[in-house]
Length: 94
Image 1 (tube, helix red, strand yellow):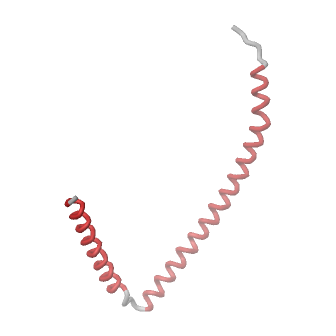
Image 2 (tube, helix red, strand yellow; image 1 turned 90 degrees about the vertical axis):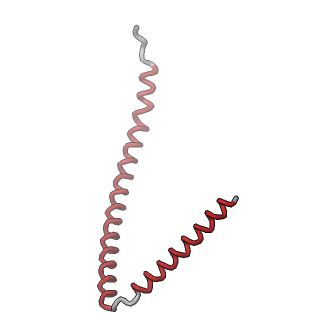
Image 3 (spheres, one colour; image 1 turned 180 degrees about the vertical axis):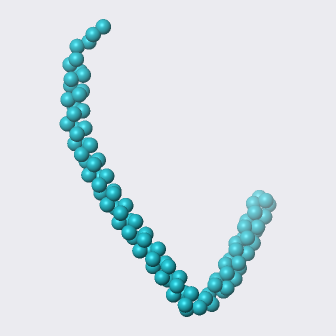
């Protein structure tokens, strides 16, 4: 019980330290000049554009795969029962 309480206290102290470090970091980063912010925004915009293009390509590939899977399903539905029937009526040979 006492060890649990000491563990909770040490976790709380660690959380306070992490929060203080993050506040210091945010205070350090905020005075970025407008030109640097503009450059960062353009870079992020470019990354989003590239990401969107990749997602569109992935969507098209997924659609093509879906069509192929439908074809495979139809072929299986046609040939699998016929295969089962032909195997079940095949004469046994010893």
